[in-house]
Amino acid sequence: MNQSVFRLTLPILFGYLPLGTAFGVLFATQLDYPWWAAPLMGVLIYAGAGQILAVSLLAVGAGLVEVAVAMFVLNARHLFYGLSLLGRFRGAGWRKAYLIFGLTDETYSLLTSRSRGPDRHHEQRVDFRITAFNQSYWVVGCAIGALLGENVMFDSRGIEFALVALFIVLTLEQYHALKDLFPIWTGAAAAGVAMLVLPPAHQLIGAIALVTVVLLAHYHRLRTSANPVSPEQRS
Image (cartoon, rainbow, N blue to C red):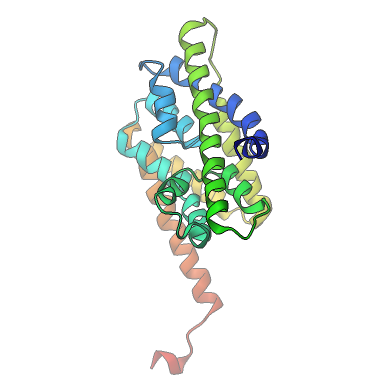
């Protein structure tokens, strides 16, 4: 079974190893922590882009609250992934908690696209192995990158731009999907206001709070205009 799972996860291997290595290098060169903390972070947090974001924020002195809020917002989409798989994970026993914890974008795609047999418990064991294999690729990449960053002298300046590039791509994809510039301009304006009125340590959480309030109000206005209340309903 492990050989077939390994073949299934080969595309994830070729993606996670270089990305994990980039994170490890960034971790070792930007933060004053031992190299083994990078793979440990991959074991305990396992958040991909969230880990890179956390390193970038910690490197500029952001507080733990800001880091936690930013990582939650970035990874909130996984809540919806998990909800769509609750039925599939039902009855998985002790494996269920790990299946939920280890659900990444790539793992979700693999679990939902592979062919499945009639044996529910067997398929859940396969899901568990797929999730574990994928996380192991990421952890190994984090360890390799951290060891390289600590022991090989090279200029790592600019490597953190990988995260900026990732968010630019995600923003463009969201625009092409929604065809709506309002959330983008709202986010930019909220960031500008936070930079003007808040100290650096609280700018991120302030911008997130501001953009959340504005978008909720915008959603309420759109919903109200789409479903106007009649005079009879008001009375």
